[in-house]
Image (cartoon, rainbow, N blue to C red; front, side):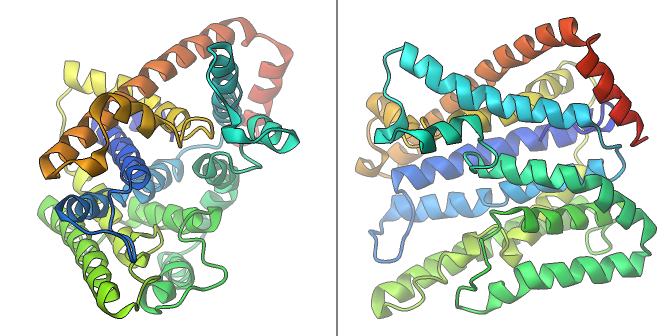
Length: 376
């Protein structure tokens, strides 16, 4: 989720896409925690149908993030420094947030305590405190192997390999209305690997099915509308028959075929977005590196189930308003949380830079540079 290269990673169009994707992620979490979605056997209403529509256009966000990484990392060298920085960033939030909350007199732990809770603070990746960060770190550790394989394979070999993996992880579960035991809905390293290879293929060989911006936008919008139609339609069928309670959730899994195609469409659409160099592009490139901090802040285990409640103390409960009230609360809450996360990560970034200035000549830094040299 960090900028993969100093030159290509600073392309303002893709940096803007990162920012938009993180807004989508926060939106998804807001909708989930407020209960403003259609669920099997749950309440309906205009606001929840609207919530389902918004979710349908935002559900591509995680796949988009991984596609951006695959697109750039396939041509970038592996760097131990990058993985160390990423892990330190995760640990910074995992450990500092409960310390600050306790120092401020706020409750932490959600009623839990003991060694298990401490484990989640000290080992946030291994305990999947942050599932996305864990999957992303594991994916990045595999990039030297993946990139070497991708570049050694012929175009046809890469097509067969990627197609086979997508069939296993995505194709079958998208059409079979039962849950497979090994299906984790795209919340795992295996699915990230599939998306990475797809993005690497696009980088190396392009996408013959999407040759212009119009087709890309049509693919994204069309897939999102189909996701909504399936989710809303199956909700109504389930309300009358009690059937398809599981399958109505499948279109909103990251490894559902329409979710993947929608992400590819949005990603390809931004290939054609041109942002002139200037103050706007500079601002975008300054804000983009803070997006991962937004995720780490609002998805911390002591905050993820609380921040919506904190916001509703000021805006009022989203479930007790009409459509316009729901939209207002959604926009305000997502913007405030995103802004707070960006501000906090800006502070974290300056702390890391300060430490980096004084540790850059140490033995550990020298060792890391030496290891990085092995991957050039």
